[in-house]
Image 1 (cartoon, rainbow, N blue to C red):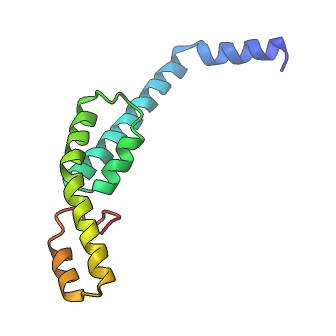
Image 2: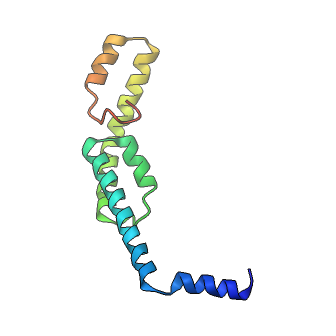
Image 3: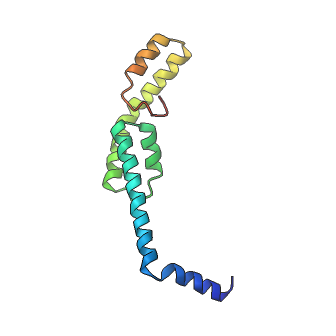
Length: 115
């Protein structure tokens, strides 16, 4: 790429408010989608999804929603791990009646990948 092409590329990316406005609008739409997904994961207690969304959270980790979601995840993670381990044991021991009881007591989202 020669100097003229580089200059044109820099000018086209940095000049004009239309590009900046559409970039900002796109960022806001992306943030709204991220917030909606995180709120839905929190509301449904989908621990696996919450964990994934927080690990990929592209905004500030001090963001109120991010902090709230991290606190929810911390609160629910221990019980989630315990119940997942219980499922594993019941599957290994081939105890279908107890497994059905444990599944019925699952307090998290049925869409959680662990369920």
